Image: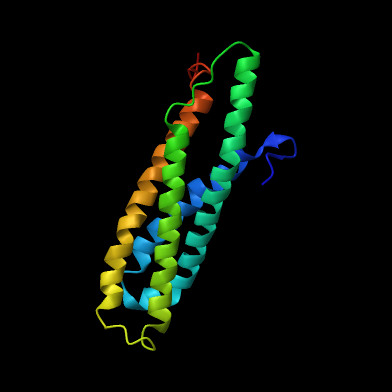
Length: 165
């Protein structure tokens, strides 16, 4: 996994994909999959968004470690300590839940696609929808928490700006 992209740390560049795609997939799943007709038409694209979000979360996790080490090395070289707070653990949790949500949506898509061949009961898609909403909600929440803590780390020491001052 590259640590930099065009000389910039990769993590802040790739993390935005996860922060956008995971919530987008969660909202799309919740809004579209509760109705059978919409589910038939839109579940595959929603699954693709969930896959893209899960992969983006993996890449964000993989690039976060090298950035954490770089920040620690730079801080030590300046005689300081780096303080990332709970962000690394929050990022790990966001990855885990984004990945679980991705797996759940793909499984749900497979059941909807091939459930009749597998003799899945008629009530299973509705029940599955509510089951997938659990990792969906937790993925959304953990992504928001990790994203907020990451943004706070970046912007907290840059001062305050007043409009019109």
